[in-house]
Each structure stands twice: as structure tokens, then as C-alpha cells.
Amino acid sequence: MIRINLLPVRERRKRRAGVQLVVIGAALLIGQLYGLQMVHNEKADRVANMRKQLSQTTSLNNQLEDLKSKALKAKGKLNKVKDKLKSYTMLEAYRSGPANMLLFLSYAMKMRAADNTTAPKDGIGSKMEKNALANAGWRVIRKEDPETNAEIPEWNPNQIWIKELTQKEGALVIQGIAIDHESVAEFSRRLSTGPFFPEMKQVQQREYLDQRLARKTIEYRLESKIDYEMPELAGKSNTN
Image (cartoon, rainbow, N blue to C red; front, side):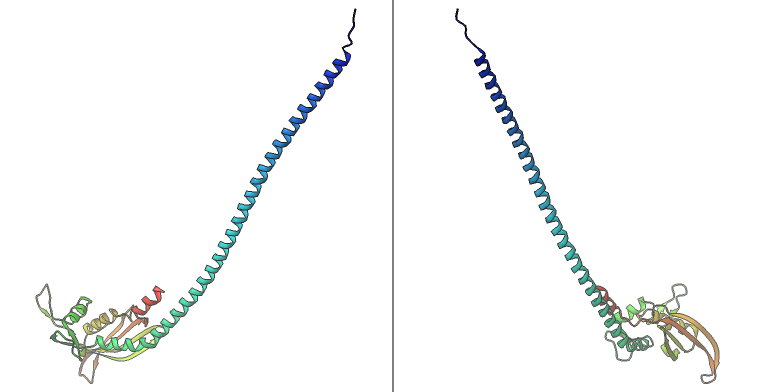
């Protein structure tokens, strides 16, 4: 009977199986390491992209802050220019304002000229001008009273005189004499339609006997804030 010793074969099989297990384990370990490396690389790429985006955002924010700072500086310079322009406008208004105000006072006391198409040198002239003034409330044309049908004549500025003009702290006081209360009312109404007297008030009217005129007259006092800034100058300063 022949006996075969199988122990070496079993040992070789065991060793071979052990080697296979080691190879499989090493392969699994390598696979896991590769997978971890891939995940790490992917996360590292994400972190790098996020850092890049953060850097770009920070750079953009810095640029915006720089632009904002420049805009604020430009706005400050623009405000200074506006303030200077407003000051120049006010200076120009106060340089020419008193003369223009006196011209308007003279214009408000003009006689109505004859009805013609051209303005004469010594009166309120053209029909268009008189119609515009009549629409503003001036009595420069004859009208009929709708209730009595009586003729209402135009106002005669020769019935009022200015004795004194006083300006103090942005206000103007006009004192004078008039033939009647109606003349004071018409004169005050005319001045209030102009650009210089925004708040014209009839402060006082006192009737007394004028010895020189040998008749009763009205001593009046008008007060108003005074605005030398002409509308066209104000418009220029606002547009800037």
C-alpha cells in the first residue's frame, strides 16, 4: 500500500491563499487610498475655487469701495461748486437787485398810455402788455362793473406818492401819501405781483388833512419781505 503525504500540498495551498488574501487586501487598501486621494483632490479643488472666488469678490469689493470713495469726493467737490455758484448768483442778485427793484417801482407807477400797438417811452403801452397786466389784477384798462354796468376807469398813479423807502434785514418799508384808500390798495396789489415783494402788506392807512393840498389825504405804510434774487437767476442755481 502506497502512502502519499498531503501536508506539504495543504501548506502550499494555505500559503497561496494567504498570499491571495494579502494581495486582495493590498488591492482594497490601494483602492481606498486612491478613492480618498480623489476625494481629497476634489475637495482641494473646491477649496481652491472658493478661495479664488473669495479673492475675486474681495478685489471687486475693494474696487467698489475705491469707486465709492472717489464718488463721495467728487460729490463733495460738486457741492462746493454748487455753493460757490449759489453765492455768485446771490451776489449778482444783490448787485443788480436794488436797481431792478426801483425800476419795478417806477413801472408800477406808470400812467396808462393810449391804445396802440407799440409801447411808448412814457407809459405802459401795447395792448398785449395791458391785457397781461389786467389779467394780473392791474387796473390799466377801462372795464364795466357787471352789477351796475358803470364804467370802472383805469387807475391814475398820480394819486399816490412815495416819501420814504427803508430796507432793513431783508424787509422793505414804503411810506407815502395817497389821495384815497383805493390808490393804496391798487399800488400794493401791483407791487405784490412783482418778483421782489413776496409778502406785501398794508400795515397802516391814516386819513388826515393835508394843508398843502387843501384836502383830506391818506398817509400809508406798506411792508414786505424783499427778494432780490430774480427768477431767472434762481432757476440757474437750481438746475446746477
